[in-house]
Length: 206
Ligand code: URA
Image (cartoon, rainbow, N blue to C red; front, side, top):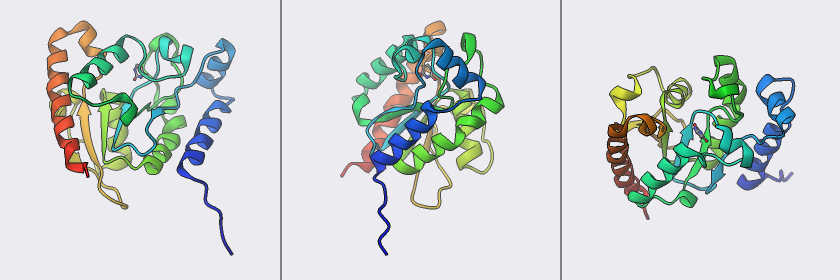
């Protein structure tokens, strides 16, 4: 008997539909009440690089796209400087609906979306996951590593191999680009780390 497998695009679309249909949960109910969008993710479904942020802000939920607000502008600028094209990568965040007043997402909120992000990683199969900020870094450790190895301020820019049964995957911890909004020196650090990331990605060029 033949089992017809859904394609990667179809499976990613299913994730999108499931997130759109979430209900009985405060962030999703709030999103619906306000007529906003979740941030499922966008970009190349075969990306070698996946960027994972924390949670969408006000600008993102107006249009349903990740990193289009002020931190998104910094991110795009940094990527352009090291010649990483936004359309070549896949960008999402750990929490896919906006927490009220941009507060930190709770552990329960993170849990609601965890399975979606894990499925996105499994389907896209990136060689490198770059986390933007501490929340995404912790999430990656909890899901793909055996224990923590430090805060973002200690480990940013250090590439590590992750535990994954089916193929290699690396983690590159980056600061969240929003830090550059209130600490200009961090922009330089982010740029240096982005350069390292761009260089490392060349390893996977064919
Ligand atoms: N911060 C995030 O983590 N994600 C966005 O999309 C915007 C800001």
